[in-house]
Image (cartoon, rainbow over all chains, first blue to last red):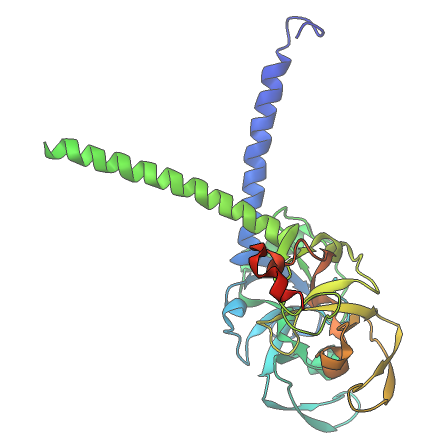
Amino acid sequence: MNLFGNAVPWRSIAKEALERTAIVTRFLCLLHVTNTYICTPTLVYGPSMLPTLNLTGDVLLAERVSHRLGKVRPGDVVLVRSPVDPRKSLTKRVVAMGGDKVTFVVDPRNSDRVRTITVPRGHVWIQGDNIYASRDSRQFGAVPYGLVEGKILCRCILMCIVASIVCIKRTPCSPMQVWPLDGFGLLHH
Amino acid sequence: MVVGSLKLWTDLVVEGFQKSLRVGKFLCLLHAIDTYVCTPVLPYGPSMLPTLNSTGDLVLVERVSTWLGKVGRGDMVLLRSSEDPRKTLIKRIVGVEGDTVTYLVDPKYSDASRTCVVPWGNVWVQGDYIYNSRDSRTFGAVSYGLVEGKLFWRQIWPLKSFGSLHGKAKEDS
């Protein structure tokens, strides 16, 4: 206070700034914990889940409780970390659990060939709803259950409208890519 | 008379709540450190001999390297089992994506070896004691997403050597 003159109360400003930062940090921590352990919004895009989900982006609510309790069943749409690129997350539908037999069309665009496989224990078989344009278990095999990160609950329609206004860059691509919105509201890989 | 004791009760309840809130906050902090920074693990099993003992070891696993992708060949890692998602294993990374791995299929009974290429996004893990280890030779390459942490401190102390010296002479046989 002596160095910078008597007018500006540096110490109390610093103290107040620290307090405000602490409040913001606590809020972000709470948001992060909610996103990781309870539920989180995710932005998904791509053609592999047509017609269920849009090509150019949907905001979905993913809950993160069921997969820890083992309550993932065939028919659920799940958020899965990609087994071939650990920085990406995919949104696909669970078709079969470990121990089940799954019959699938290998390459529906080019042939009618069908294969039947038994899903290994501890794995799940995921497929996109749009089998013509989806990279899923038919290409990279059954996915270990440990890679399942959440179950999609519902679509936030209002957020979809907001997202379509705010997010301009969207290139349709397969596999369906998800950019999880973390507590900071940023989109990141 | 009744109002007095009621106030006492509410005071007690409020104080109890505040104390448990502090304990809760401390546990949350512990959990956050456990999940994002470093966690202690008690491994058991013979598959990592002689590096880790069958029982009685305590190791520290740090979780920062996996996020940054700085896990490579030769690292001992904690990974979630691809066969049973409720189990976690400790193995050593022998090959990363793109590597060609040559391994002994069943060294207890034969000398047969096989070679394969580790697919993208996966790692090849093996236990140090290949004669008694269920690893990638059995269940194949493991997705990198299942790798949860890297061991950085192999032994804090072997717990079985803790205790009175009275029985120690018998143990050292």
